[in-house]
Image (cartoon, rainbow, N blue to C red):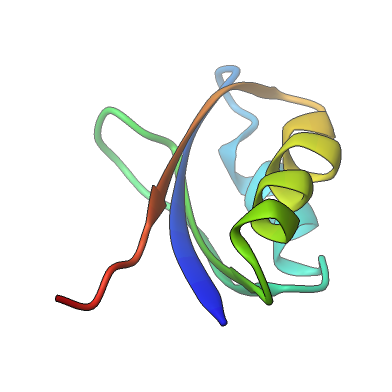
Length: 77
């Protein structure tokens, strides 16, 4: 299982609706709107890195109001 934090920037006033939409997606553990340089932080999981990438590109980035994402895979050293 691969997990990652996905940091999201949104259009002004869209953070809450983006977080609500993403929170309902399969594979999303948590999605919250926050303050700071990013507007929404998501924790997601998938079976493989490729599957995680497909989730970000094909599902999360397609949500209306998102302007940029940054995916940070969780590592266990």
